[in-house]
Length: 314
Image (cartoon, rainbow, N blue to C red):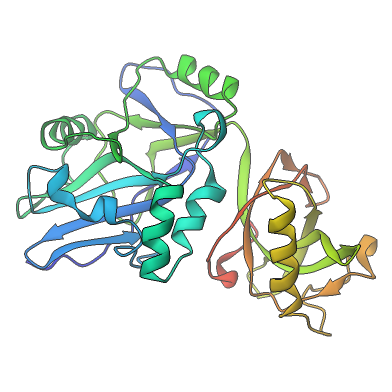
């Protein structure tokens, strides 16, 4: 049977951590969502948008190294650890953005990845998405052998304690799952909740400012339901080296336009240089202001993402 890619189940955002023995918590890893499909046709990897990533992560594609069955769909997050052993979104995007097989092989040594597996949807010719989470999790523990590139995401019953530990480590957050929850393919369900230590979005770059001929800040936008791009803030900070800023300057210069991409000129940036709204970036921020802008935005990493899908949450 040839398995077609599916859209994964997604958690619902929450600010509260539910009580009760029916809930467990898992670390919310900051990386790339990847589903692994193994069947008679071989092994294929797809991200949450159903874009193939088999070539990008050969460590995962060799499924016989870590899985005892050859007919399966696994769900997990590909991460790359940076400073202090914390996952770095920018590092994993260095792998995810590559297209040349030789570059992928060479970068695999300098940017190693880990596949953090947290669910199973299909097993030995049968869909098991209807089974409760605790049963699916038990199946994972039986068929997966961990190694340096493959890990199972632990389930923690002390939900508040895990969230406090995440905050101390300055990591992204936790996902809470009801033990009896099915896997709702392509849906958001309150059986899964995400509680973040900070917020993040993927935004469109609509312009930039220069200092000493190098980009000093980027202007960020999100689309409304009518297709208008709204300015939501700017940032010149984040996980960027001087080399990264120089490379960004080169890339943005190539898409400069005389046409304003936003629905109106940002008052503080009338002299900004406009670009075609083609590049997208993952932004970490503290909260939304009452005026509809991001507070304390900073760059997490650049990502290939459809600009038209960067939407205001109305």
